[in-house]
Amino acid sequence: MAMPKGKKFNNGYCSVATFPSSKNYRQIAKVCTENGMKIGPSNVRNVLLSAMQKIVKPICEANSIHMNDKQIMEIAKNPHFQMGIATIIREGLKK
Amino acid sequence: MKNTSFNLYTRIGDVPLLTREEEVELSKKIEKGDKCARDTMIKANLRLAMSVAKKYINRGVDMDDLMQESIIGLTKAVDQFDWTRGFKFSTYAYWWIQQAVRQCVASNSGPVVLPSNTFSKLYKISKFEKEFKVKFDRVPTTEETAEMFGTTADTLRSLRQSAAHPRHFDAPLFSDDSGSRTLRDVLPSNEKSVEEKLDDARLNETIQKTLASLTDRERLIITMRFGLDENAELGEKNGNAEG
Image 1 (cartoon, each protein chain N blue to C red):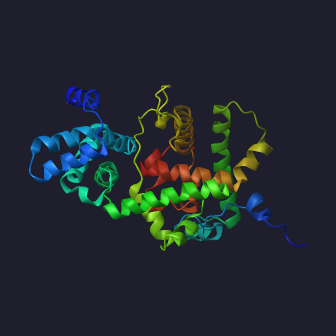
Image 2 (cartoon, each protein chain N blue to C red):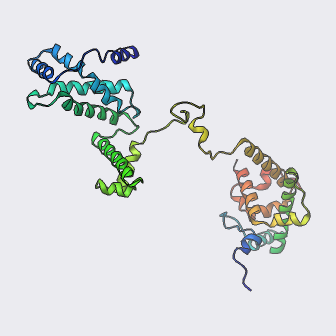
Image 3 (cartoon, rainbow over the protein chains, first blue to last red):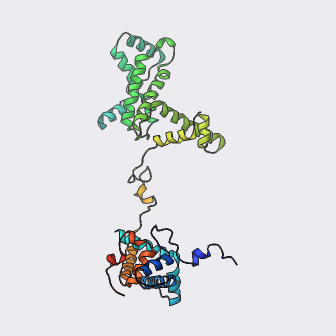
Protein backbone atom coordinates (compact mmCIF):
# COMPACT_ATOMS: atom_id res chain seq x y z
CA MET A 1 0.00 0.00 0.00
CA ALA A 2 1.34 3.39 -0.99
CA MET A 3 2.19 5.88 1.71
CA PRO A 4 -0.44 8.63 1.93
CA LYS A 5 0.62 12.01 0.58
CA GLY A 6 2.35 14.16 3.16
CA LYS A 7 2.72 11.26 5.55
CA LYS A 8 6.48 11.21 5.34
CA PHE A 9 6.76 14.98 5.70
CA ASN A 10 4.52 15.02 8.75
CA ASN A 11 5.73 11.89 10.48
CA GLY A 12 9.02 10.92 8.86
CA TYR A 13 12.53 12.21 9.30
CA CYS A 14 13.48 15.86 9.07
CA SER A 15 14.27 17.07 5.59
CA VAL A 16 17.76 18.53 5.36
CA ALA A 17 17.49 19.87 1.84
CA THR A 18 16.96 23.45 3.06
CA PHE A 19 20.52 23.86 4.35
CA PRO A 20 23.24 23.68 1.73
CA SER A 21 25.88 21.76 3.67
CA SER A 22 23.49 19.46 5.58
CA LYS A 23 24.24 15.73 5.49
CA ASN A 24 21.97 12.72 5.69
CA TYR A 25 22.44 9.95 8.27
CA ARG A 26 24.38 7.77 5.84
CA GLN A 27 26.84 10.57 5.01
CA ILE A 28 27.27 11.48 8.68
CA ALA A 29 27.97 7.84 9.57
CA LYS A 30 30.54 7.62 6.78
CA VAL A 31 32.37 10.80 7.87
CA CYS A 32 32.40 9.71 11.53
CA THR A 33 33.64 6.21 10.71
CA GLU A 34 36.38 7.58 8.47
CA ASN A 35 37.51 9.78 11.36
CA GLY A 36 37.73 6.90 13.81
CA MET A 37 34.30 7.20 15.44
CA LYS A 38 32.66 3.97 14.31
CA ILE A 39 28.91 4.57 13.98
CA GLY A 40 26.07 3.34 11.72
CA PRO A 41 23.33 5.47 10.10
CA SER A 42 20.64 4.27 12.54
CA ASN A 43 22.84 5.06 15.45
CA VAL A 44 23.38 8.53 14.02
CA ARG A 45 19.62 8.97 13.95
CA ASN A 46 19.32 7.72 17.55
CA VAL A 47 22.04 10.08 18.78
CA LEU A 48 20.37 13.01 16.96
CA LEU A 49 16.98 12.14 18.45
CA SER A 50 18.54 11.81 21.88
CA ALA A 51 20.04 15.29 21.48
CA MET A 52 16.69 16.61 20.30
CA GLN A 53 14.98 15.12 23.33
CA LYS A 54 17.49 16.87 25.55
CA ILE A 55 16.52 20.13 23.88
CA VAL A 56 12.75 19.49 24.13
CA LYS A 57 12.78 18.85 27.87
CA PRO A 58 14.06 22.25 29.10
CA ILE A 59 11.85 24.06 26.58
CA CYS A 60 8.78 22.25 27.99
CA GLU A 61 9.91 22.98 31.54
CA ALA A 62 10.47 26.66 30.75
CA ASN A 63 6.93 26.86 29.42
CA SER A 64 5.45 24.81 32.30
CA ILE A 65 4.29 22.04 29.97
CA HIS A 66 4.37 18.56 31.44
CA MET A 67 5.03 15.80 28.91
CA ASN A 68 5.81 12.13 29.16
CA ASP A 69 8.74 10.47 27.37
CA LYS A 70 6.58 9.38 24.45
CA GLN A 71 5.33 12.90 23.83
CA ILE A 72 8.85 14.28 24.14
CA MET A 73 10.06 11.71 21.59
CA GLU A 74 7.25 12.71 19.22
CA ILE A 75 8.29 16.35 19.38
CA ALA A 76 11.97 15.45 18.98
CA LYS A 77 11.14 13.49 15.82
CA ASN A 78 8.95 16.24 14.41
CA PRO A 79 10.64 17.67 11.29
CA HIS A 80 9.17 21.12 11.93
CA PHE A 81 10.67 21.15 15.39
CA GLN A 82 14.04 20.01 14.09
CA MET A 83 14.02 22.65 11.38
CA GLY A 84 13.07 25.30 13.95
CA ILE A 85 15.92 24.28 16.26
CA ALA A 86 18.32 24.20 13.33
CA THR A 87 17.30 27.72 12.35
CA ILE A 88 17.68 29.02 15.91
CA ILE A 89 21.14 27.46 16.22
CA ARG A 90 22.18 28.92 12.86
CA GLU A 91 20.92 32.36 13.89
CA GLY A 92 22.75 32.04 17.21
CA LEU A 93 25.99 31.16 15.46
CA LYS A 94 25.68 34.10 13.08
CA LYS A 95 25.40 36.63 15.95
CA MET B 1 2.89 87.13 5.82
CA LYS B 2 -0.24 85.86 7.55
CA ASN B 3 -1.30 89.44 8.28
CA THR B 4 -0.79 90.39 4.66
CA SER B 5 -2.91 87.53 3.38
CA PHE B 6 -5.52 88.19 6.06
CA ASN B 7 -5.70 91.82 4.96
CA LEU B 8 -6.03 90.73 1.33
CA TYR B 9 -8.87 88.32 2.09
CA THR B 10 -10.80 90.84 4.19
CA ARG B 11 -10.38 93.65 1.65
CA ILE B 12 -11.17 91.49 -1.34
CA GLY B 13 -14.71 92.81 -1.57
CA ASP B 14 -13.79 96.47 -1.11
CA VAL B 15 -13.89 97.18 -4.83
CA PRO B 16 -17.38 96.61 -6.25
CA LEU B 17 -17.97 94.27 -9.20
CA LEU B 18 -17.77 95.89 -12.61
CA THR B 19 -20.56 96.09 -15.14
CA ARG B 20 -19.88 95.17 -18.78
CA GLU B 21 -19.71 98.87 -19.71
CA GLU B 22 -17.25 99.64 -16.91
CA GLU B 23 -15.08 96.72 -18.02
CA VAL B 24 -14.94 98.09 -21.58
CA GLU B 25 -14.19 101.55 -20.27
CA LEU B 26 -11.34 100.30 -18.08
CA SER B 27 -9.97 98.08 -20.88
CA LYS B 28 -9.76 101.07 -23.19
CA LYS B 29 -7.80 102.98 -20.52
CA ILE B 30 -5.51 99.97 -19.94
CA GLU B 31 -4.76 99.87 -23.66
CA LYS B 32 -3.61 103.47 -23.38
CA GLY B 33 -1.31 102.51 -20.49
CA ASP B 34 -3.38 103.68 -17.52
CA LYS B 35 -1.90 101.82 -14.54
CA CYS B 36 -4.63 103.00 -12.21
CA ALA B 37 -7.28 101.44 -14.44
CA ARG B 38 -5.30 98.22 -14.58
CA ASP B 39 -5.16 98.07 -10.77
CA THR B 40 -8.87 98.72 -10.52
CA MET B 41 -9.59 95.95 -13.01
CA ILE B 42 -7.43 93.51 -11.03
CA LYS B 43 -8.89 94.51 -7.68
CA ALA B 44 -12.45 94.23 -8.98
CA ASN B 45 -11.81 90.64 -10.10
CA LEU B 46 -10.03 89.37 -7.00
CA ARG B 47 -13.19 87.50 -5.99
CA LEU B 48 -12.93 85.45 -9.18
CA ALA B 49 -9.26 84.71 -8.52
CA MET B 50 -10.09 83.59 -5.02
CA SER B 51 -12.99 81.39 -6.09
CA VAL B 52 -10.74 79.56 -8.56
CA ALA B 53 -7.91 79.21 -6.03
CA LYS B 54 -10.32 77.77 -3.46
CA LYS B 55 -11.10 74.86 -5.77
CA TYR B 56 -7.50 73.68 -5.49
CA ILE B 57 -7.20 73.64 -1.70
CA ASN B 58 -5.90 70.35 -0.23
CA ARG B 59 -3.83 69.56 -3.28
CA GLY B 60 -0.57 70.03 -1.43
CA VAL B 61 -0.20 73.79 -1.98
CA ASP B 62 -0.79 76.52 0.56
CA MET B 63 -3.82 78.77 0.07
CA ASP B 64 -1.58 81.86 0.08
CA ASP B 65 0.50 80.42 -2.75
CA LEU B 66 -2.62 79.45 -4.69
CA MET B 67 -3.99 82.94 -4.29
CA GLN B 68 -0.72 84.45 -5.43
CA GLU B 69 -0.68 82.28 -8.55
CA SER B 70 -4.30 83.01 -9.36
CA ILE B 71 -3.58 86.74 -9.10
CA ILE B 72 -0.66 86.27 -11.52
CA GLY B 73 -3.10 84.55 -13.90
CA LEU B 74 -5.59 87.36 -13.42
CA THR B 75 -2.91 89.96 -14.19
CA LYS B 76 -2.04 88.18 -17.44
CA ALA B 77 -5.72 88.10 -18.35
CA VAL B 78 -6.07 91.84 -17.66
CA ASP B 79 -3.05 92.58 -19.87
CA GLN B 80 -4.30 90.46 -22.76
CA PHE B 81 -8.06 91.05 -22.58
CA ASP B 82 -9.50 92.08 -25.93
CA TRP B 83 -12.71 94.04 -25.20
CA THR B 84 -13.57 94.29 -28.92
CA ARG B 85 -14.63 90.63 -29.01
CA GLY B 86 -17.61 91.42 -26.82
CA PHE B 87 -17.15 88.87 -24.05
CA LYS B 88 -17.25 89.56 -20.35
CA PHE B 89 -13.85 89.82 -18.72
CA SER B 90 -14.57 87.03 -16.22
CA THR B 91 -15.23 84.56 -19.08
CA TYR B 92 -11.79 85.28 -20.47
CA ALA B 93 -9.92 85.59 -17.17
CA TYR B 94 -11.29 82.34 -15.71
CA TRP B 95 -9.14 80.20 -18.02
CA TRP B 96 -5.99 82.23 -17.43
CA ILE B 97 -6.43 81.98 -13.67
CA GLN B 98 -7.22 78.28 -13.82
CA GLN B 99 -4.18 77.59 -15.99
CA ALA B 100 -1.87 79.48 -13.61
CA VAL B 101 -3.24 77.72 -10.54
CA ARG B 102 -3.10 74.28 -12.12
CA GLN B 103 0.48 74.82 -13.18
CA CYS B 104 1.38 75.84 -9.65
CA VAL B 105 -0.34 72.77 -8.18
CA ALA B 106 1.34 70.50 -10.72
CA SER B 107 4.81 71.75 -9.90
CA ASN B 108 4.43 71.89 -6.12
CA SER B 109 2.01 69.22 -5.06
CA GLY B 110 4.15 66.12 -4.90
CA PRO B 111 7.63 64.67 -4.69
CA VAL B 112 7.65 64.19 -8.47
CA VAL B 113 7.25 67.34 -10.55
CA LEU B 114 4.85 66.55 -13.36
CA PRO B 115 4.61 68.47 -16.62
CA SER B 116 1.47 70.59 -16.78
CA ASN B 117 0.01 68.53 -19.64
CA THR B 118 0.36 65.36 -17.56
CA PHE B 119 -1.31 67.05 -14.66
CA SER B 120 -4.12 68.16 -16.91
CA LYS B 121 -4.46 64.59 -18.22
CA LEU B 122 -4.70 63.30 -14.64
CA TYR B 123 -7.35 65.90 -13.94
CA LYS B 124 -9.34 64.71 -16.97
CA ILE B 125 -8.93 61.09 -15.87
CA SER B 126 -10.22 61.90 -12.42
CA LYS B 127 -13.18 63.75 -13.96
CA PHE B 128 -13.91 60.80 -16.28
CA GLU B 129 -13.83 58.36 -13.36
CA LYS B 130 -16.28 60.47 -11.39
CA GLU B 131 -18.68 60.66 -14.34
CA PHE B 132 -18.30 56.92 -15.01
CA LYS B 133 -19.17 56.14 -11.40
CA VAL B 134 -22.29 58.26 -11.53
CA LYS B 135 -23.38 56.63 -14.79
CA PHE B 136 -22.56 52.98 -14.11
CA ASP B 137 -22.42 52.91 -10.31
CA ARG B 138 -18.91 51.46 -10.27
CA VAL B 139 -15.35 52.65 -10.59
CA PRO B 140 -13.88 52.03 -14.07
CA THR B 141 -10.99 49.58 -14.27
CA THR B 142 -7.54 50.86 -15.14
CA GLU B 143 -7.81 49.15 -18.53
CA GLU B 144 -11.13 50.87 -19.30
CA THR B 145 -9.75 54.27 -18.33
CA ALA B 146 -6.56 53.66 -20.33
CA GLU B 147 -8.58 52.70 -23.40
CA MET B 148 -10.70 55.82 -23.04
CA PHE B 149 -7.60 58.02 -23.03
CA GLY B 150 -5.77 56.10 -25.72
CA THR B 151 -2.95 54.93 -23.47
CA THR B 152 -1.84 51.69 -21.81
CA ALA B 153 -2.77 50.50 -18.35
CA ASP B 154 0.91 50.46 -17.34
CA THR B 155 1.38 54.09 -18.35
CA LEU B 156 -1.72 55.05 -16.42
CA ARG B 157 -0.51 53.23 -13.30
CA SER B 158 2.87 54.91 -13.54
CA LEU B 159 1.19 58.32 -13.97
CA ARG B 160 -0.89 57.75 -10.86
CA GLN B 161 2.12 56.61 -8.88
CA SER B 162 4.03 59.72 -9.83
CA ALA B 163 1.16 61.94 -8.77
CA ALA B 164 0.57 60.16 -5.47
CA HIS B 165 0.91 62.28 -2.33
CA PRO B 166 3.16 60.91 0.38
CA ARG B 167 1.65 60.73 3.85
CA HIS B 168 3.53 61.20 7.08
CA PHE B 169 3.39 58.33 9.54
CA ASP B 170 2.95 60.81 12.38
CA ALA B 171 0.16 62.78 10.71
CA PRO B 172 -3.26 62.55 12.41
CA LEU B 173 -5.37 59.72 11.02
CA PHE B 174 -8.33 61.96 10.29
CA SER B 175 -8.13 65.34 8.67
CA ASP B 176 -10.38 66.94 11.28
CA ASP B 177 -7.77 65.98 13.91
CA SER B 178 -10.52 64.64 16.17
CA GLY B 179 -8.43 61.83 17.62
CA SER B 180 -4.90 61.34 18.75
CA ARG B 181 -4.35 58.28 16.53
CA THR B 182 -1.76 58.55 13.79
CA LEU B 183 -1.26 56.53 10.64
CA ARG B 184 1.59 54.68 12.33
CA ASP B 185 -0.84 53.45 15.03
CA VAL B 186 -3.14 51.68 12.60
CA LEU B 187 -0.65 50.29 10.10
CA PRO B 188 0.15 46.63 10.71
CA SER B 189 3.74 46.16 11.80
CA ASN B 190 5.97 43.24 10.87
CA GLU B 191 8.11 43.94 13.88
CA LYS B 192 7.74 41.55 16.80
CA SER B 193 6.11 42.77 19.99
CA VAL B 194 8.15 43.14 23.18
CA GLU B 195 6.55 39.96 24.59
CA GLU B 196 7.46 37.99 21.47
CA LYS B 197 11.01 39.30 21.58
CA LEU B 198 11.32 38.32 25.24
CA ASP B 199 9.91 34.85 24.52
CA ASP B 200 12.39 34.42 21.67
CA ALA B 201 15.29 35.52 23.83
CA ARG B 202 14.26 33.13 26.60
CA LEU B 203 13.86 30.23 24.15
CA ASN B 204 17.22 31.00 22.59
CA GLU B 205 18.89 31.08 25.98
CA THR B 206 17.34 27.73 26.95
CA ILE B 207 18.48 26.13 23.71
CA GLN B 208 22.00 27.52 23.98
CA LYS B 209 22.30 26.21 27.55
CA THR B 210 21.08 22.78 26.45
CA LEU B 211 23.47 22.70 23.52
CA ALA B 212 26.34 23.39 25.87
CA SER B 213 25.35 20.32 27.88
CA LEU B 214 25.35 17.93 24.89
CA THR B 215 28.07 15.33 24.40
CA ASP B 216 30.77 15.87 21.78
CA ARG B 217 29.26 13.14 19.61
CA GLU B 218 25.79 14.70 19.75
CA ARG B 219 27.20 18.11 18.97
CA LEU B 220 29.15 16.76 16.02
CA ILE B 221 26.13 14.95 14.61
CA ILE B 222 23.89 18.03 15.01
CA THR B 223 26.57 20.14 13.33
CA MET B 224 26.75 17.83 10.33
CA ARG B 225 23.03 17.13 10.18
CA PHE B 226 22.06 20.80 10.11
CA GLY B 227 25.09 21.90 8.07
CA LEU B 228 26.39 24.22 10.78
CA ASP B 229 30.07 23.67 10.08
CA GLU B 230 29.94 26.38 7.37
CA ASN B 231 29.26 29.04 10.01
CA ALA B 232 31.27 27.92 13.00
CA GLU B 233 31.85 24.94 15.17
CA LEU B 234 28.95 24.38 17.54
CA GLY B 235 31.32 23.13 20.23
CA GLU B 236 33.47 26.26 20.04
CA LYS B 237 30.48 28.59 20.33
CA ASN B 238 28.83 26.82 23.24
CA GLY B 239 31.86 25.62 25.17
CA ASN B 240 33.08 22.09 25.36
CA ALA B 241 31.00 20.86 28.27
CA GLU B 242 30.89 17.12 28.39
CA GLY B 243 27.39 15.73 28.94
